[in-house]
Length: 428
Image (cartoon, rainbow, N blue to C red; front, side):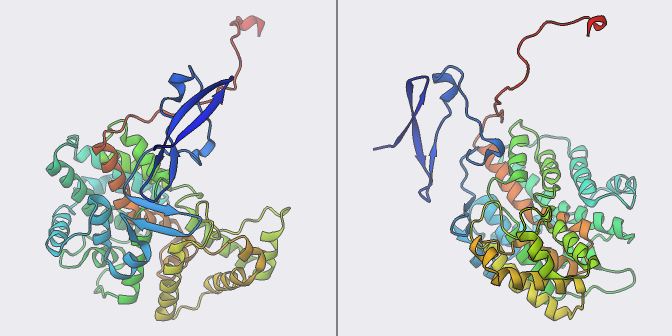
């Protein structure tokens, strides 16, 4: 027998169906609320309790620290899978066979060439431009070079659009970095795998040979996998909302990049390093800043600890902490900023105040540490996040379009002035 929820408004009772997900989550379907109640809506700032869609892509249980892509535990994927395997899984629903993965990678490489005119757009930005603004602009500009809209009912057209952006986006990300660093653009090497090719495009210096580092590459693969999708977060919801108007894939992704830019979302790992640098400038006393973080009257915020969704340890943080330790050991870096990070980490994991409140270091804390250790400038942290999140955005856009979801159109509770008469300017 299906469950029902009863809402009483003005003395009248209205019943609504209760839906159950495959992980036994319950959701009240209020799709007919405004019609049956003759105008009543709900209000939920930030949509913290509102499901905007049904999705079969990612399952997240913040209370128990669970994250799964298409049913696969994030811990197992990060340990055993390659990034393109995970991308294929997210987008198409199943892990690829060896032949499917080879074809996917081959098709991506074939579509990785970026039009020369895109360089003119990149040249128009000053070297000081924030790379997220540059990356969003370049992604949006892809629409001009691919003006035909994708027929979502055509498997071939949909697939071509997917491999096209999967091929070009790493190039645009690397070029954005090299523009900021004042380095000549690198076109990559199709004899390399996806991640090694990206690292080469990022870090190869002129007149020198690129050499792959297995520890760095492994950490980068884990970072990309851990960032690949995270249910209906701000940027993913943006991609789906923009796409619901039947905007194309590239335009929807550009909107997602802009949403990711904010310091409360993808910019959080940048905020971590900026906080560590501020602590260093003030003498590097971690105990002082842990005390400030516990003081309710102190405006200081401890960045990179706790999570808006996870009420337990961020499962991604457990994985990337190990990778961060391996990278720091392999590179043998002596950096006071990273020493401060280690100090904060140790204190937070042992301080009852943080342990009781489950304010553990999150994925942003450790990803920022790895990016800094690799010599990636702080403004480039969020573009690196975007590269990882790309397949998740694609999967969410594809799912939304294939399900023919209606255009997103939230309601509001109006709290402005009531009807009033217009006054001539001489009487105002």
